[in-house]
Image (tube, rainbow, N blue to C red):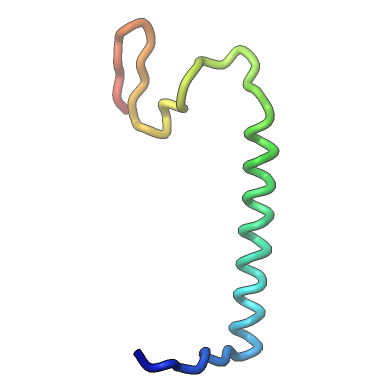
Length: 63
């Protein structure tokens, strides 16, 4: 294998990567904050809307 020099990024590319990393860190912090909260009077398990299927008392309805 040949050793290649790391690619030099332009200042605009470096700024874009830094902004993306900052957004990703903010999103992960928000997700961690929301994961600590508990839902009040919610139904247990995963959110059925996310999986396009709603089941209550054995009756499933798709939307």
